[in-house]
Structures are given as C-alpha cells and as structure tokens.
Length: 83
Image 1 (cartoon, rainbow, N blue to C red):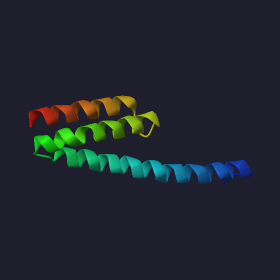
Image 2 (image 1 turned 180 degrees about the vertical axis):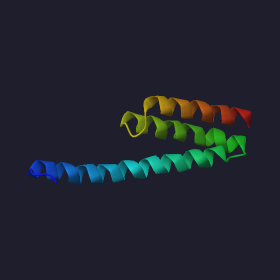
Image 3 (image 1 turned 120 degrees about the horizontal axis):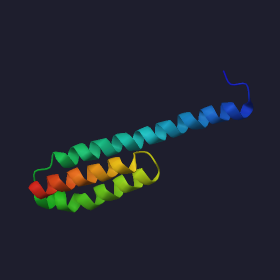
Image 4 (image 1 turned 90 degrees about the vertical axis):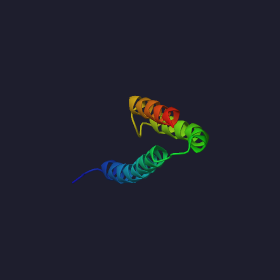
C-alpha cells in the first residue's frame, strides 16, 4: 500500500481518470459499430464528419493512439464509399 499522502491522491486520480477514459473509449466503439451497421449512404455521409471529430479528439487526449484513429477513419471512409 502507498505510504505517502501524494501517492494516495495519485491512486484516487488514476481511478477517476481510468473510469473517464473507459467511458469515452466505449462510446467511441459503440459509435463505430453503429456507423458500420449503416446501409444508407446519405446517413453515413452526414454522420462521417462527427465520427472524424470524435476520433481526432480521443487521439488528441491519448485515449486512443493517433494511428488507431487514422486507421478507423480510413476504414470508415471505405465503408461509406462502398455503400
């Protein structure tokens, strides 16, 4: 167990941040799943910019890796264009 007051605080902060990051990562995964399930091209075109924005924001704050965001955006664009 931690012996210093600052270490105890760090543990509390890490738990809180992990929960916050987990929420946004799960929300992102659900949004990607929803986007991939789309069959209407017009709806996909309308939703794609918001997907891009979400992925870029999550990469910026290191919730996901920047290359993962780029790969997801690329695969979603391919899906959208194939509709």
